[in-house]
Length: 157
Image (cartoon, rainbow, N blue to C red; front, side, top):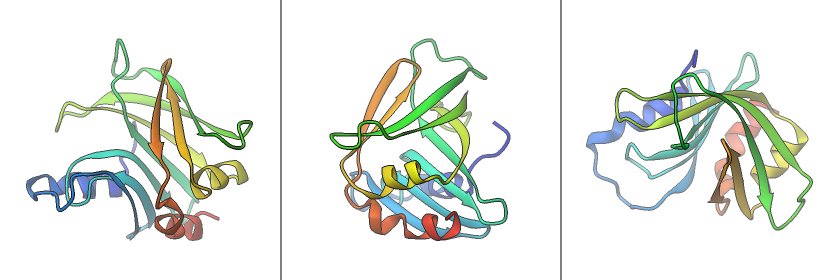
């Protein structure tokens, strides 16, 4: 895991601030070097999924918090993003490496991808995001992602 997303660290740094709302939502923001889209609890250290676009390279760093069976630092997996209920043939595969965070003992997978028509559709059309990784699948609601994702789509067209 060469780089850690600025947005991921920024949101995690708010650990001492109590959450205004205790439910996850999509949060979009402009960062110093691009933009970020995170599925997180606002003003907390709870971040499930994070996309950070580096404006210069148009590379998207993806962080996904997930505790797989037999988690091992350095384990390499393919993370597959798709949407349940529509466009079942559309998916985006992201090679990812897993590491345990020393700060909070969470297991984080990190990978890199470029924006593609498939990824854009997955992240903009609503429904339920399916994240398949290490033989398990997690579901994340996409409600609110279209508005929150504007900065990411502008930085990484």
